[in-house]
Image (cartoon, rainbow, N blue to C red; front, top):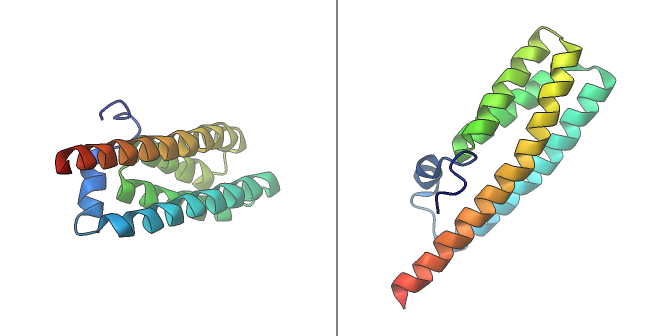
Length: 127
């Protein structure tokens, strides 16, 4: 279950999901993935138009969301993107954003894999 450790802090995720029933996990994760898609689109649009205030706000929100769900690498990169937006460094913003977009995809994948593995282990334990 630790193959995604660089993308996903499972301890933080478990803290966030503590007290949440298995039936509630799927809607939460679906909402997270929907938010990722919307935020990716908003970030890309803000970068394309040079609206670094909007970009900074999106990066800030993504940073908080990433930390909540235990996406440590994404959190760190979103923090760097937020700072690059503060100083309007176009080249750095575009480079960091490319990494953020990649990490959003791999973080999403890491979470999906983790939850599937966890579900399988729970089924095995209950069998």
